[in-house]
Image (cartoon, rainbow, N blue to C red; front, side, top):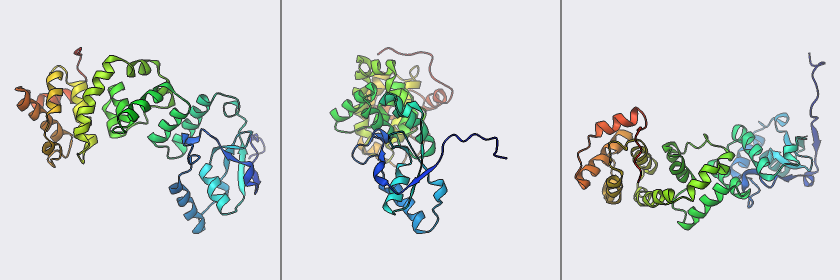
Length: 291
């Protein structure tokens, strides 16, 4: 059956651990070489319980023996003095391309095959000096790490899913998008960030921070024809801590109800919470208010 199949990459085996190194851009973590001990410990448990399948533990390296895929496998096998099985990847993207192209390729592979986190991707983007990542990092450091890049992405893309940690809709190319880079340096974004910092400071004490931010910005982004944004932002600045800490808003509907009731009471408005919920359920406003 396999006589007609083409052999594209032989598998080698060696005990010469020193010939390998972990590709510098792998996961973007210089301090650990991209290695997470928690994952190594899980692999170690498989070895300890005799559940390790050596044939499935083949790593992939470039022509300089830098590990492109399988750094954790290499680490656990080296610690247990077991042979390393490897395939040499001759693809020029892993041997001759720019670092940014390579890290993009690594991300695209590892985001499917292994548990890349949002911080892995952000760290990788910083390491290759992607302009949007550097701008985000500068803002995060300026404000003492009180928010994450995902929250900045939510503001930039006007997409509340980022507040809930749903980041896989973007990849490494996001950090090179020209319009996003221009936006983060704009006066409009500075204005948005100023108001975000206010509600974020409130939300940080809540056990449901992501829910509160998601509902707040769902209203900001998608209910502009019903809610006066200037007054709504004033209301957010005055929201009491006991309201933020309340156990009453356990879901989206309850959180929106709380936000609109406070908006009405503090700003002398009479918006029906049901009207806001209907607007949010049936799409984005066609009217966009210029602030």
